[in-house]
Image (cartoon, rainbow, N blue to C red; front, top):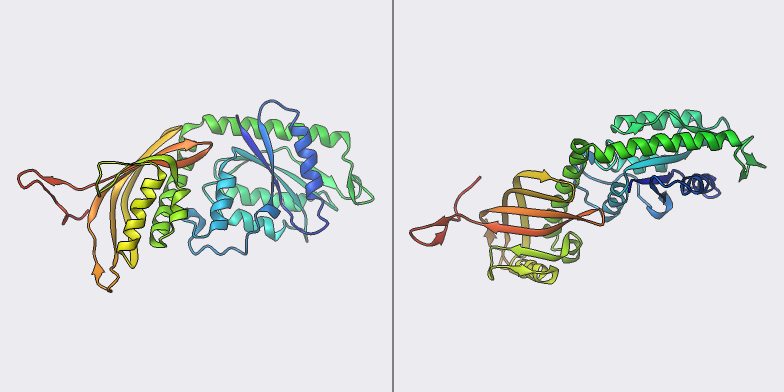
Length: 329
């Protein structure tokens, strides 16, 4: 089913955004054409943007970024609830948007704003920002006035015309999100970016010798055809044991991947390329490593792409029966 996130764009004490989001959710939950969920930025305390690489690169270094990216990626469209602060959107909302790129692109978005003048200027700025991210901003919007739609400027009491406007906004967001789910090229672009980021996280975890970081990137029933015997390693514990052996062998470890070629379907994807594991031995001796052929197979499980199979190999010299380990891509 199409999934729509209702994003609360303020975290300040005494905010009214949670009231507005609850109202949106209560109306939306009566529909049967999509599943709606409130996303509260208070649950994602992101520091000022601290990623060293641009969001377009899709290689997130920090756990808080990866958690936020996984949250946003689950949804097909969004309703963004924003107040107007000094004729603009809250800094915390801009910051949260700036952290990501692929997780936002090509997804529908509608705006519910509130403020002294209905938050109109904030909504216009937010629309421009989302359109730069190639999001599909719908035309209908809801503008709530602090003077007429909040009793004593405190408790939300929207007029009937706002209810009708909200229903129209939701109609458009759901319709556009549903189109996005069936627009295969667009979805493939998004999934390909997620998969490339996923492999980037594998590389980062290996370099950090982070077994628990690796655990969350594989399915529990992963089957691995690794370079080391036996013929196969079955299950996440067997896979992690293999990586633990590598981390014991190297004092410092480096992993690099080249020429990745992803192929993405609706529920299954694979990518192939070349990888090299190298590093420094415990006695300080550099170990240059060798280039191998590597394949990652992914399956989408509960909306998340996980590695269910990987394979590493080198060419075989038929006459000698030995692997050829001195080739370079």
